[in-house]
Amino acid sequence: MKVIEVRDLKKYYGKVKAVDGISFHVEKGEFFGFLGPNGAGKSTTIRVLTTLAKPTSGEVRVAGFDVVKEDEEVRKRIGLVSDRLILYDRLTVMENLRFFSRLYGLDESTIKKRARELLELLDMWEWKDTPISKLSTGMKQKVNLVRALIPNPQILFLDEPTLGLDPHTTRKIRDFIKELNRKGTTIILTTHMLHEAEILCDRVAIINHGKIVAIDTPRNLKHLFREKEIVELELLNPTDISNLDGVVKVLENTGDYYKVEVSDINTFLSILSSKKVKLKSIRTHEPSLEEIFVKITEVGS
Image (cartoon, rainbow, N blue to C red):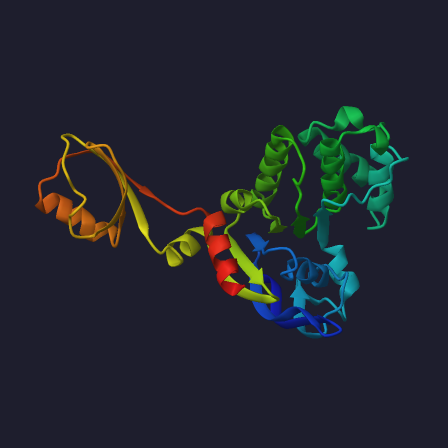
């Protein structure tokens, strides 16, 4: 079931084509990454999806509702967390959560129950009566996350949720949102931390210059855009394999250890077997999502 449907979305600011005719969908319960360099159009797209900006043209439906004609219905079903805190410094944690939750029409008992449940999961319950101004950056972002989750949104938009946070807090928030997704919340993540997207996302879309240039699972993207295969081998006996068919380039060689670039891994393994080269170990190097991202966006530039 599609919970987000985008068809030929365009968003122009004067003559600037921030988003230039993109189409994609997100399935219910999916963890979807929306990636791109600065100025590529990803933030503008998210603003349209969350009803903060109106499209120039195209059709966008979120949770089955049109983001222009039925924007209030969309807002009832989504949560938004970004690196920009939507909190009041002078209010306490609970006062902030109570204020924003009432905008969704939640009653006091529901607010208290959900707030305690979520704050305890993020180790923040003991800080409930503390003014936001007294909290660390990581603590504030945890409260920001709870603020978005108290209404129990069907779809959660995360825009750089761990930007500038320490490793411990980053891991805590990452594990928390993974569990949310496991329980059925659809999550849309925008981030510059490509390793985070690789770990978390079922699929990712990469946008560049206002157009989607790739969309697939991280695994499939890495396979699709891989230009070369790197193999590391430990040999039982020193053997010269540098001139074997299939070896494009020798990257490292110590006699009994080789790191080589090959044209095709399966062909190379067959040649090793036919030459009776005895191996102690073999390991292939797979490009990271970050390497693929750089390659795709550089080509697009």
